[in-house]
Length: 243
Ligand SMILES: C[S@@+](CC[C@H](N)C(=O)[O-])C[C@H]1O[C@@H](n2cnc3c(N)ncnc32)[C@H](O)[C@@H]1O
Image (tube, rainbow, N blue to C red; front, side, top):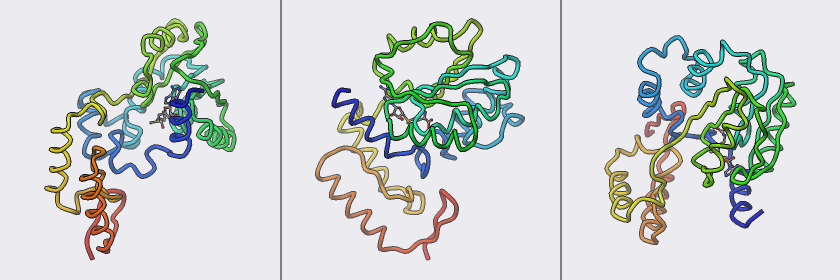
C-alpha cells in the first residue's frame, strides 16, 4: 500500500458515512427531492420506501426485478450498508462481493452481514489497480464510489468486463468540484454565505468552514464555541430550536 492508500484506508475505517449526515447529498431533505426528480422524473411515488433508499428502490423495481440477479459486486463498499439492503431485497442473489481499501470498515461490514445471515463476503483491494474478472457479475453497485477513484480509464472497462452480458450497473455519484477545486474567492463566498444563514438552519454539528487558512480556522472555532454555549433542543435529525 502507498502512504496515500494507507491514509484513505485509515480515514474510511474510522468514519461510517451517513450516520449523522445532516450535510450528506444522498439524504439531505434539501437535495433529495430535486436529485431524484432529475434522475427519474416525477413518478417515483410507487418506488418510495424511504428518502435515503429512494434511488435504489427505483432502480431495483425498474431495472432489477425482471432479471435474475445472482451475483453482485459492490465497489468502495465501506461498511456495507448498500449491498446488505440490495441482497435483502433481491431474493435471487446467491453471492455478493464487497471491495474496499479500508480493512477496518470491511471487518465491520463482514460482521454485520454474517449477523444477518447474508451471502456477502469482502475483499481488501485498491480498485485503481484491480484485477477485474471476466463476465462474473449480474449487478455492479457503485454507490458514492467512482468519485473516490482516480484511474477511471481502467475502472470503467474493468467494470464492463466484469459484468455478464445483460448485467446492470447501479451508479449513484456526486458530480462536481471537490473543495480543493474551488478558488480562494469561491471558498470565501461560501464561508461568508454560511454567516448569513440563521443559526437554526446551520448544521447541528457546527459550521464546517471550507479552506485551510488560519483566519477561517479561528473564525470557525470562535463561531462553533459560541454555538456550544447556547443550549438547544433537537428535533429529529435536522431541526433545532433554542431554549
Ligand atoms: C463515501 S465511502 C462510500 C461507502 C459506501 N459505498 C456507501 O455507500 O456507504 C467511499 C469509500 O471508498 C473507499 N475507497 C476510496 N478509494 C478507494 C480505492 N482506491 N480502492 C478501494 N476503495 C476505495 C473508501 O475506503 C470508502 O470506504
